[in-house]
Length: 137
Image 1 (cartoon, helix red, strand yellow):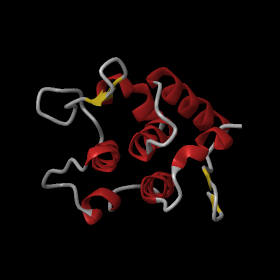
Image 2 (cartoon, rainbow, N blue to C red):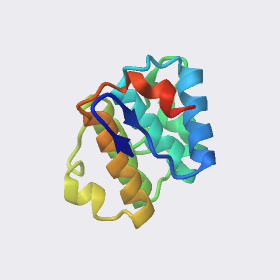
Image 3 (cartoon, rainbow, N blue to C red):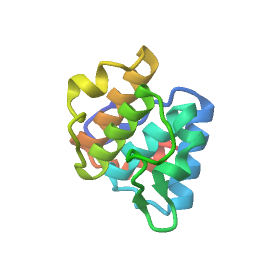
Image 4 (cartoon, rainbow, N blue to C red):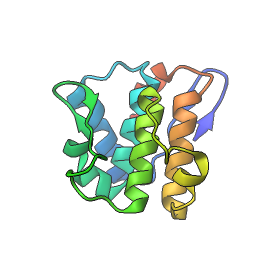
């Protein structure tokens, strides 16, 4: 990710990641200044397993996260559960007993750890993410 004093430039892991991210923000109708939702969509679109199960994680019609981590729901690996916890926490501050830096980041491989770091930067960037259109060009 490149940042200068006027722009937050998102670095995608691949062309597929960029395409998925663009699809999510387009289908959702996300406001470009929504850094919370941008970080959520960045994580979901950057991980193959999360993207395949995106409908269990986020409701595009209601524009909200789904309670997918509760019992009786779909099974997720520990790494996926950690990324979902991070998605939810960056989106609206959601947390449970496992939403700590050690619990979330401790079980991620290097690719997902990098993805998590960029999502955190998107969420807490000092620059507004209104430059999202530039990142998608």
